Length: 498
Image (cartoon, rainbow, N blue to C red; front, side):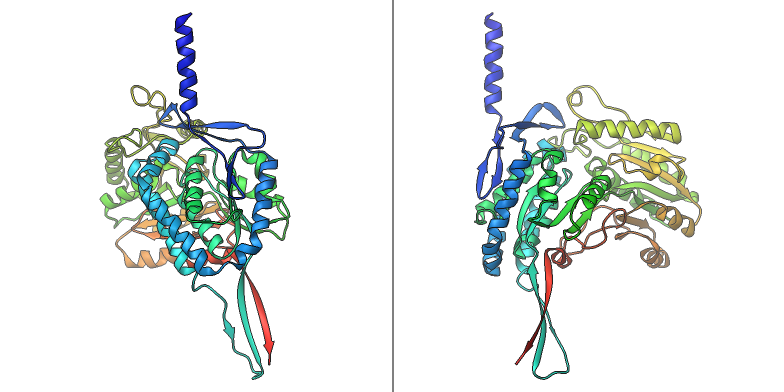
């Protein structure tokens, strides 16, 4: 009887120590109206509950949208220099707390601690970039033949913007969406992924510490099916920026009014072409960094490697040897190069595709659910390398979003380009070569929004446009860089006579 009482007491104490986080609506941290919550688990150790978060309802989402609409007129009238200072102070806050926020990100998302810290610091840079660029982004004066008339354009905010983001880059993706929206004078409803909500909370916390006025930035956590319609189809919502799966993006596209502006960055099946003249050691490094960093959970991650037949054997030998040497473990473990998959759902998806791959192609290495000390309570799988992959196979065509690499034979540059482009996606693509002609032709021939030459398919500069082609994007507005402002502003043309 005593043992049972002690066990219960310990369980109650442990539960009491789990931090709880609410929504941020109208400048206040509040619980969901129903009081419902959900737990966020550490994917490297599911016995570790990172936090407990508000399981929002449609009513909560409606409140957030209304708060943003109410705040819009005053924020639109706020001087650009005051908006910029808020972004700068938010960046200061992220940098000051980078070490702690990185540890939290690693616990909830699984990525290696150094990568998490880099993401926090990069996000702070993003805020600073837009704080500066926002001061010079405006309209233009247009020449005309009437000496008594001036014709000019001015850019205005679109209104209330919904930002919906995934779990793989839970601070940097929201930062590159929210910062240009705010500096341009819009108000925001932000819904982070339920699989990495704490990082979203910390980003909003940074803006709150920076002095963002009540209602200008609102955060709601919870299931997309519960809150989605209230923050996408509601009349107050003038624009939606979404990053996630192509299927989810298409659903949003079909459900919103035609007057709602959309920015959808979606899936990818990104190729790396290894030509006969490539530095094979570098090509192997590009494959591993592009395909296995973040455990393959990047929309720009390398999932197809198209290798010229004459160099395939030495390339594969070098690749398998390096992959075997990779250290797999918790992102909190020093030297860990591959962490867990972010969720149980993602683990099952990856394992299912590995089984599909085994029935289609030849598994050279990996593809096993890992067990034993350090693995039993996490979502760990060894990287899978498949060869003898052909274009019609599912592992060559469908986005897996995990550490699975498909090696495809090619016989010429033309063959490589044809196979690289034979996909419904067009997000990122790379080539490994020393030949300037291949480099020039590749930049022209590849059907991809991001083109890399002797670089990984992953990664983009904060000051460069980012976005995909084909079913990887709506191909309307680009994210990042100065081009990122286009989505968040609308143009008026003014004819003024004397």
